[in-house]
Image 1: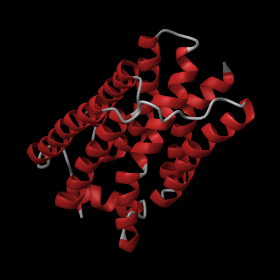
Image 2: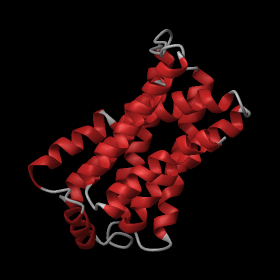
Image 3: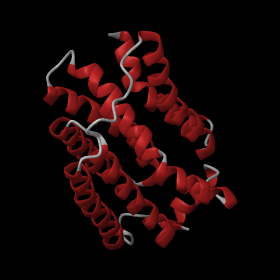
Image 4: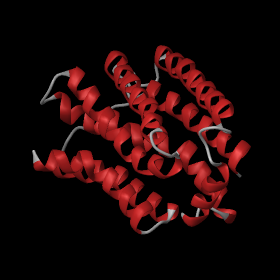
Length: 216
């Protein structure tokens, strides 16, 4: 139980160390993605678990579901920020915060590429594959989806607390939790993480378009 708890809160701890203690996006990325990549890898090697099975992962249905839900997410994210940017966001404070976190200079393009092309894969493999399988053997599918979604949204709250003022920082994490529920449902219903990954890529693209349009 202690090991399972650590696996659930580990990514949040990495984000906390990187952003709050070290105040560096670069360090945060290094800690966070190392956890998402190496913890499942070492666990698989140690326990001699079956390797990730690519069979039936790339069905037409999974790709279509991922594309449709992803486009909707992208439009919702960009549209919401466009409407609320002058009331909810303090863009000047956000720019300063990103500078404080060292999210500046030539490395920004590389960090953006990581968020679009690496982040969705590692997050979905961790939560909707690695943790999903661990939890579904212990609790119901519904609880599995809820638990993975909660801890997935928990570390987003760490950064959102500083991006928004109260109570908008807590309200802003609700869509993240709902996205986790949706992607968890896709993982269960389609028995594939293709739809969650594709949808996640487009959602992250929406966030990066917001950054490039209003913050950069």
